[in-house]
Amino acid sequence: MKNYMFGFSLTGLVLYALQLLPNIIWMLVPPANNVLAKNSSSYPIFNIMEQAFGIMTVALLILIINKKNGRNSGLYILLAVMFLAGYYISWILYYQGMVSPWLLIIGIAAMPPLYFLFAGLWMKNYVVLLPCVIFGITHIAITCSNYLKLHS
Image 1 (cartoon, helix red, strand yellow):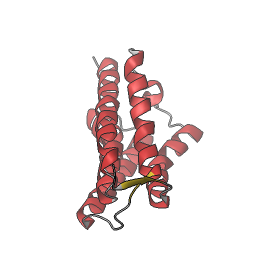
Image 2 (cartoon, helix red, strand yellow):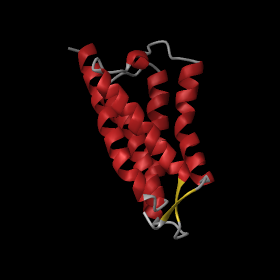
Image 3 (cartoon, one colour):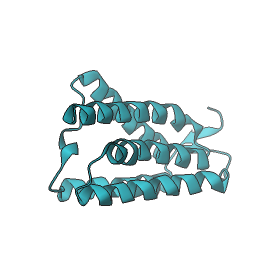
Image 4 (cartoon, helix red, strand yellow):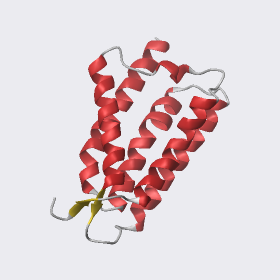
């Protein structure tokens, strides 16, 4: 932790805001076939874990800064941008009424944690990685359990 300091990362905030955009649109103008409206676990502990580790991921991305200025390989930001683009495309398809396991689980549930993971790697913010992985696992698991319930 000696390479990190508490501060404010405008880069982290911008990266978070870019990921948040589809969620804001979803809250303001929900799609007609909104199967994700009740995407929470029937086990409250999983909802608590998902929310806590999701908030922790974002907070660490914004509030923890690696003192060694500079960024990692451009490959990490390229992968982050690809996952963000995939996330945006998935939301566009969702709004067009497409509801499939690939879209819900891979496109909407898996893309944000992968985006945050590679954004954190690019920012050399390794503190964010573990909470991000836990957030990703719970986020995907909850979406899988709800989607499979809807289609069983």
